[in-house]
Amino acid sequence: FVDTAGLRDTTDTVEALGIERTYIKISQALIVLMLLDARETVEVLLKDVQAVYQSLRENQRMIILINKADLVDHDHLISAQDALNHRYSNCKTIQLSAKLGINIETLNDELVAEYGPSLTNSDAVVITNARHYESLLKAKENLERVSKALENNLPTDLLAMDIRQVLHFIGEITGEITTEEILGSIFSKFCIGK
Image (cartoon, rainbow, N blue to C red; front, top):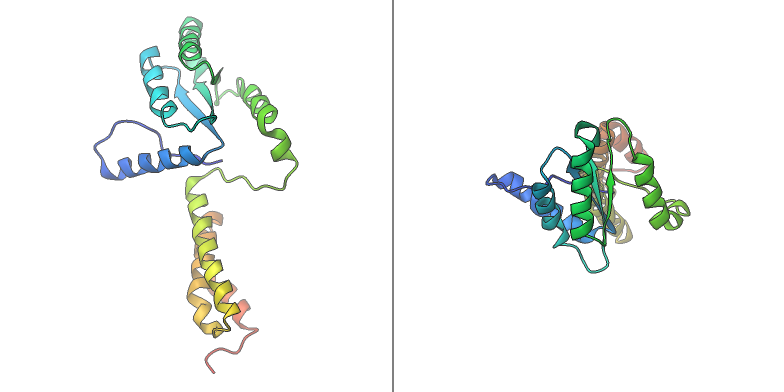
């Protein structure tokens, strides 16, 4: 799971880069959970879904989540859900309130029914934060460099920079970056600088 930046029109360069990355993540996803704000008009909801829908791969699933259902009247919810179901008939639409927990179980049941066997029978790790995912990728790249260096019998003191980077990226996830202690422990077993 990857939580991405929201999608909207923007002139801000940094925000535009985040949106571009979101579309990349959408193209890589097994399933897309499109979270909408129920307080928006039906027209805005349809437009927002269209922006993502047109970027889906063939046979890629999307579940449309109309959040904050507790904050709008029932007629508006029915109208929005009917319009979304009509236009995007191959997408499941669920009204929910994340704050109150309304229909979270329905979403869970939908995900388990579709992907449960492949997820529950594995030891897969689920990453729900895009920054954590990026940090793990960077840590992996550095670990691969360390592994290759060890295979090529490079001196261990040359590996310190890559190991520091691995620890830094993992520390970004755990919130605890204590590279000196860990490096001290690792290199206490090696003779460095001779």
